[in-house]
Amino acid sequence: MNQHQNRKPDYEREMRRAGIRITRPRKIILQILTDTEDHPDAMEIFQRASAIDSSISLSTVYRTMKLLEGMGAIHRHAFEGGRARFEQAGGEHHDHLIDMDTGDVIEFHSNKIEALQEEIARSLGYDIVHHRLELYGRKRKR
Amino acid sequence: MNQHQNRKPDYEREMRRAGIRITRPRKIILQILTDTEDHPDAMEIFQRASAIDSSISLSTVYRTMKLLEGMGAIHRHAFEGGRARFEQAGGEHHDHLIDMDTGDVIEFHSNKIEALQEEIARSLGYDIVHHRLELYGRKRKR
DNA sequence: CTTTTTAATGCAAATGATTTGCAATAGCGT
DNA sequence: ACGCTATTGCAAATCATTTGCATTAAAAAG
Image (cartoon, rainbow over all chains, first blue to last red; front, side, top):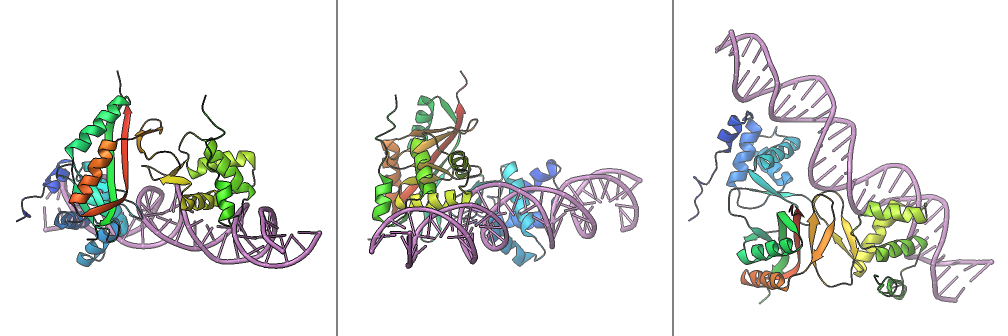
């Protein structure tokens, strides 16, 4: 089974250490993020947070996402269409396959592809700072 | 020298056939696109077009880009940061390496990577409709 | 546990890119 | 040249995200 309880890097501790206040909205958002298996966007996070504390504002969600991104606690993805989507960081690096019909995101990883990317960049005289590999597709029919 | 004159798929003919009017703004924008080696955004295209005919509007640039994209005459890329950038279609498929310092775009292609992508998607039960591979990097120092 | 300090919040207004409604204009078939 | 209607320019509208500011509330201090 999946480990759910210990998989949470203690961001609260890290935030305290950095002199960042642990507020009620931030606690709630952090909880939502760690509870989540999918890749929600700011509006979805806002709605889930509102259900817990209806006074939370969308601005705060955005501000918190930016804060967490800066701490390296989450990754922001600008997939095609509309809003940015987030996922908690901490796992292994991976790329994404987006189901064009459902919006579902499937994570995958290929050392071979990573190596080829490095090789290509090097041959062009560049160092890769980061990259983005997204496959957009539909479930195979048959 | 680069070939400039024959490299232009005759979109005007194609548009006429589709009952689309060849207007002055469209002619100018099409010309800018075929003359261009880089990946300009709508604002850059608008400025280059304005230099030729100052009455052209940004809306028309956007509308024309959408029209051309629909025809398959250009590709739209949503690289990181700000605006979408365009390039005329017609060449071989390729991916992009973006110079984070200059914004320059370098095109590259890897059959191996393409094949691996297909393989991964297949193993996940998906057919790839399209994909996006962008490397963000800086010129190697040394 | 009250006071103090100042970061964080909520709200509304601002941004920035792109799109759209609409009246005026200009392709192009006749 | 004429008329039909697609296309344009302009301003206003969208959409996602950010920001200014007065208020609130963490957490540091007493």
